[in-house]
Length: 99
Image (cartoon, rainbow, N blue to C red; front, side, top):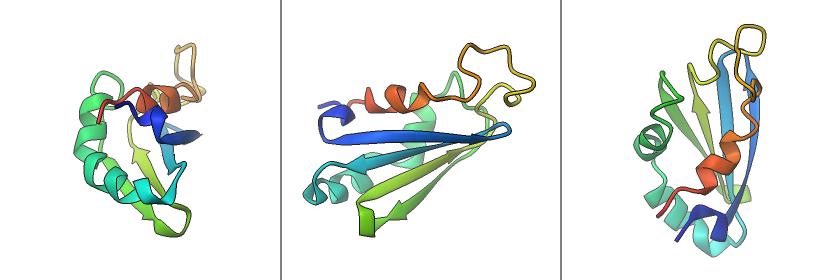
């Protein structure tokens, strides 16, 4: 199954760092997300875009995971030539991950 079937996502950015949240639609799916969507798995999924570490923060009260991805935005908004300088499309790309 694809992540978009059981979760939604939001993104934010600060400089060359992107954070991507993954929020379960249903609380019963949160444990599976924690098990299947590891920092290593996210790093592999974004390997062509994220050149630094991926750190995961767990937010059990809202059934969410937050991934902070370093060196992810081509230098940041003021330096990147990317069409998506803020990395807003990264949330959609994460939701395409097969679990």
